[in-house]
Image (cartoon, rainbow, N blue to C red; front, side):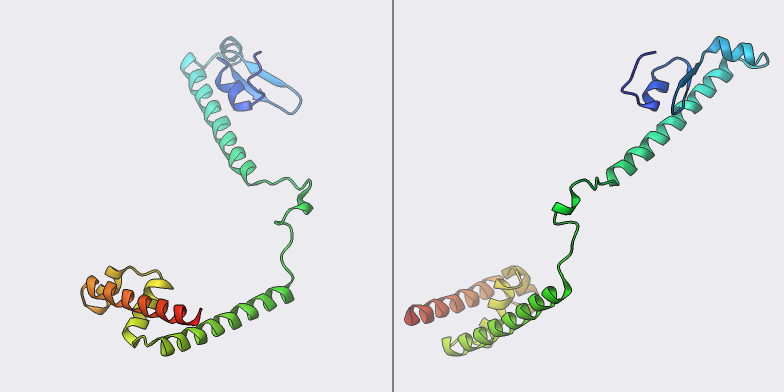
Length: 169
């Protein structure tokens, strides 16, 4: 029998016979064997049984393939970043620092807008555009104005911020 990469499905599918694959042996049942053992059966019965056998092996092969893709070898797994999580105390410290940095950034931004002479409308549009990633068209839809007016407002805010930083630097 031809070795089809030792896949039970491939062995059965590529054989004209019905193949039973066990852990230690492979048994093939030919049409002649089948008809000899079952005198009341026909060639059509053998063909139907062969199709059923092919379908069963196919479904098993698909199920094994799907399961195998989920398996991960544990050899050397301890060397990867996937095996351990960060200790909770370190994670909490990082989150606290992140929150504090955000608070500081917003306070600095508020002061910058106040000192830079930026209006509340310019500030709102600048924040939406720069920090939230909203397009000028999206902002214009939200506020019910033209996108050119939004773009002009954002550009004026940028111009004032540049002027402020140029004076500081």
